[in-house]
Image 1 (cartoon, rainbow, N blue to C red):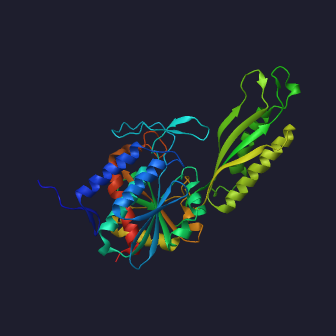
Image 2 (image 1 turned 180 degrees about the horizontal axis):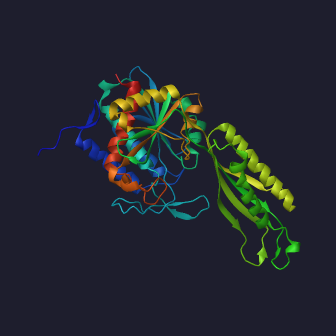
Length: 414
């Protein structure tokens, strides 16, 4: 049987089998070679080479960020974000194109690196959408600003691009669009108006006591006991200071102190991560954390602990009117049954900063790229940030590209 000349991605969007095959190989190449946040040097260079092949003007922003400017006459200006960084995870997918890459962590240690959150999918889908638009200029008019953003995982990339003068060099868009692959059935899209993800803050707290021999505790001020009291008391913020309708999370993820069991150390250090649904709750929770840390330090007879902000994720707020416009396009393209109303996500994203920094609305959605059998009998495939996270490659490219193009053409389509 002869191979079909075209493959439909969505109504009025068709590509050749060779188009999909080419981008599938591109996806595998990105998957094999992930890089850690703010270290996406090879990734940025590969994106630039592809944009050159497509004849798309581009420039660097935020160090390892790449901005492509795809213009086609008069029309709307639309931003489209794709994040590019990998994670310090040892891949356990068993894929033939699995990553064996390593990278250097901020402390100088070496770690395995994996595209464990699907950013390789995002890069490829954005490049595929750009390739389609570049080859089908009769179907659209306007300008697409392609934002290949680094360091999403550390909440540093979007801000770095903005601070580097992104919107002084690129035309101001009327909306910034972004998407994310998630462990959902292939063909589905998930979005909601309002807050699409949680605000997030990560802090490192260092508690300073007085060191002594373990047999002479009276000569010490034990920072472990003080820090442990802080950790326990912090758990009362959500349960006793917030309304049950406020879905906040306070997690202490690391705790380090001492080198030997018979020495009371001078310092103890722990780090925490906070997820809040809105700015009001964020301010309330962070103020409560500072109050508890300070009060427990005073109760232990020690000075104020050092608090260092590790990262801070901004809000990700979907504009209601633009969300309805994109949802309507998805509904027409994929059918009503493919639209999933999203709950407030506990994950966090810095894509919102790209729009909020210049007062431009944002629309962010998730798309599925996992076969239905992985959801049978209550099963779930490994999720984002898991060493086994493995979207179906063909679905990730076909459906992710279709979703990107459907949303873009809702604005720039003729």
